[in-house]
Image 1 (cartoon, helix red, strand yellow):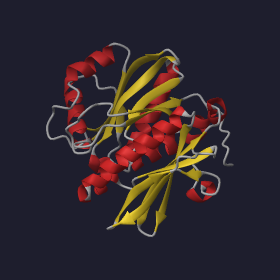
Image 2: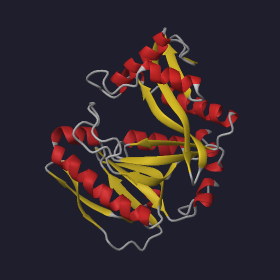
Image 3: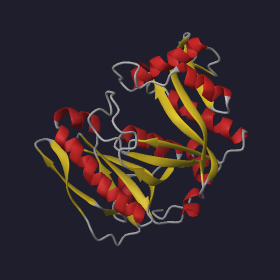
Length: 292
């Protein structure tokens, strides 16, 4: 099989193909939600980063970012979009794109890369927390408003903003494969489960939120597959969004940090959790975990 090449898209033909990847990756009905080539050209020419994964002369994936600023962080790199064509998923293309982005950022003096993602997408949670080693301290309600694509349509675009401290020991150990996220069995007896759930009519729904949170470690459940859930019970998916929103906002206000994605299979059912801790950020970035 021909090798996948990773290149800077230096012409409009490649930039237009990146638009096609956006349409495919997010199941967009048309190009209305896609980033136009002239904006990508401006990003490239003014200190931003775009890399395309090319196979057989065809763009099959991309990552795109630009400079950001926050009073707490100072200047950082904001990674706005990462997409891979559906038929090319599972080939580590997304991981390679992020690692190339990390190398690019390090070479330009960045310490931090930031992006947003839908906290209800389990595969993205596993990728961001488990493989890359991000943490999150911020959650936004309906961050992008209504997005008319196959993934977001009809649901509020709630988002985590994650921090990828690219020079930290945590990140170095994660991306090198020398550190892995905990299993459910490792944390189930030391972390308090905040959202109570039950199965009804073949689907799992949230039923209550614990109000008393004495534990330094918390497991916060979210749907095993919200995309499938939305197809069979839209109201259930929306209820998950609202219950999760209430719980995560309460935890973050109390100083908890989202640090891991934890998953398990119960029979044929996938269950997803976030692990949150009150440990200081510096200790987490040094790879010190309170559950070990």
